[in-house]
Image 1 (cartoon, rainbow, N blue to C red):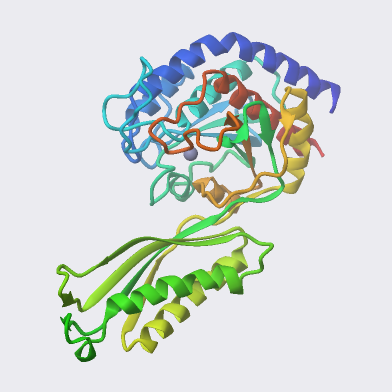
Image 2 (cartoon, rainbow, N blue to C red; image 1 turned 90 degrees about the horizontal axis):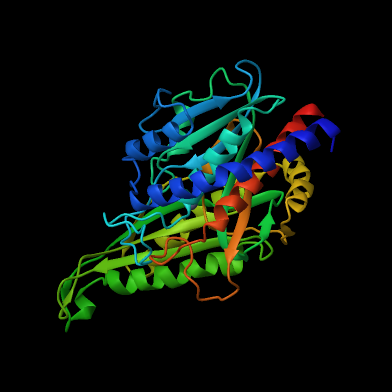
Length: 393
Ligand SMILES: [Zn+2]
């Protein structure tokens, strides 16, 4: 830790404390007026006004990039997500949403923290620019991160690191983790259509039953992760929907399933794609039916840069966080797309009470405390200072 950076860090944390009351108010306002993916212009306006940059142009929809510090030269990017989820809120706080959408993924907290961090940074002698990235549509496909990159949102900014912080109720409050390597999974969706021959329920020998065939496919798919993937590496195949038929006494002609494929390693991801097709086609064929598999490719795995992660840990500790154990999950975040444009670091900040049944992310009663605005902001500063440090090496 150089003395210059230490000084910046200390001043940044002090100014952050002055920004917090307004940031918490902003959090309540954003929470009360959520906007779902691809409809976040109102939220972007609130945030850019709070940043004192109401005229910054929109990119790829509601996205915005606000540059702070030196107007030329390299930069580091700090992301906040603009979108809420189509969930009916059940928290009963006075600043609950009433419009059928909800900030159930903590993006209200992330945005408020980002505003506080960016405002506190304005008078600091930053060694390079800080980009406040207001990213739309994290929760849907096509993803906002992908769209910002495609639209050239970072052209001319020479971004040296992409940083993000996400709340994580599976970590205890006061814990933060910046784990090197893959921390979130790639996420792809699939659809399996099994075609057979329908007929009378009482004459099964005259049909090729796609319901039984698909049921066997679903069971066989579970063996791919259990028996084919290296057990020390995480992967998931979840079948989330099943549909077939319209009457109890009719064998239908077709049956369909949709599901999610996740993997922490790119080679496992490709392997899952291949086995999904093989197993579906061959199990269906063994039952006299024909399976067709369609894949929709989503975000890649989110990989934390080792140097950035290692540089961040001591700054998190200095900020008073209890060092977490390595934290990885098969959740997915479109932040992973930034990995194609530069080194990435996602830190996770705990909001958990330790109870296993407390409302998690995307739950209608998920409600992190206002203290989490401070925690996320502190972790953002730790990540930014670590990136400055890495830049100087
Ligand atoms: Zn989220």
